[in-house]
Amino acid sequence: MNAAQTLEPAPLIDETIRLLTDHYVFPETAAQVAEVLKRRLDEGAYDGATAEELAALVTADLQSVNQDKHLRLKHHAEPVSPEQGAAAMEAIRRDFETSLGGVPRLELLDGRVAVLEMAPMLFPLGWAAEPLSAALTLVSGAEALIIDLRGNRGGDPDTVAFVCSHLLDERTHLNTMHWRDDGRVEQSWTLPYVPGARFGGSKPVYVLTSGHTFSAAEELSYDLQQLGRGVIVGETTRGGAHPCDGWTVHPHLEVTVPTGRSVNPVSGTNWEGTGVRPDVACAADEALARAHELALARLGD
Image 1 (tube, rainbow, N blue to C red):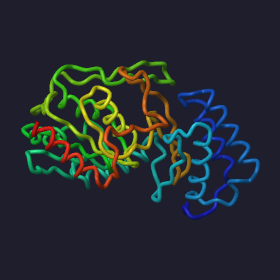
Image 2 (spheres, helix red, strand yellow):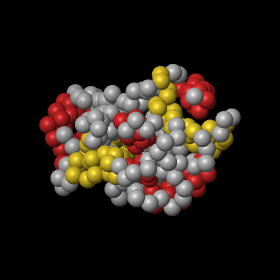
Image 3 (cartoon, rainbow, N blue to C red):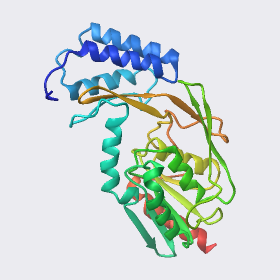
């Protein structure tokens, strides 16, 4: 099917409502959003839309009640697999292969301050453990570390725990996930062992953020901030704390629905809707220079 052809919206909206009602982590909000979608369908708001246009319209309506940025109808230019989550995994694999496994930049600045960029996302740990371990082992001998998440759009909570494990000396509770579908409560902790050298829990760590930093990258920032382990430098992040699953509802369209909510053990809440607020606020393109200045000042004390 040509993605530019107009669609019959009713079946797609009905399926989106079903997925929302069955899986969204907040059932009462799901009912409110479903009413918005039904009303908009009846009003003809989706009539004559192409797949790409429908994705934008429906996403705006899905987020209209509580601004949950993980609640989306995503458009894919290329046809995607009908299997649950397959659309996202295909795109993720392509990004992994073209970004050196999610560590596209590692640099040593003046003062033995290391910069490690993690982008475009924190890939599934089964893929990312090897490149991340190699990078984190290399920076372990630096005097200070700057983690650049300005271009990171999210990823795997297990990978968040893996990175944190290199930056803390003791086993530490990072997050608790509450899942709707099966009622599980799942805790995330740092690992007792890492395959390479640890940077450790005492040397300075700075985390760069932007208005594009999202989801699991926000969790990494938030966890380190709440633990007092990292200084966040840059801009307030996008504010998406709810993990989601994806379902293909059309060859070019995927519904993503948050199925759980996170609770930080220090703050008792999360960054949903608010984003992670920086400790040192500045424009994203100034954040690296600012963090380097802070690190040099700290090391000179």
